Image 1 (tube, rainbow, N blue to C red):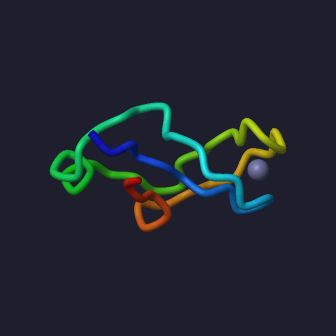
Image 2 (spheres, rainbow, N blue to C red):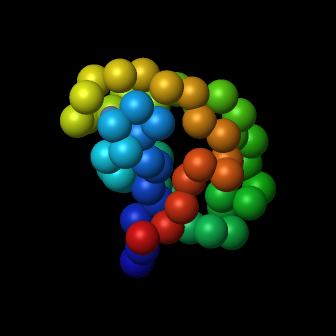
Image 3 (cartoon, protein in one colour):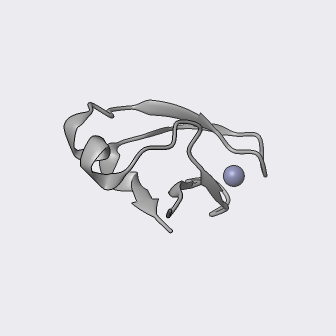
Length: 55
Ligand SMILES: [Zn+2]
């Protein structure tokens, strides 16, 4: 199963989203200004649904 990933806006590091779900579920949920804490640079940025991708 592919992992739902997000790419850090600060350093470009790609890491898995804390809440894993499939593409169908992702379509149905609201994901606006979701705060993510990058494990690489420790910076918190806000992400929208378009910033998430499967890998
Ligand atoms: Zn980062």
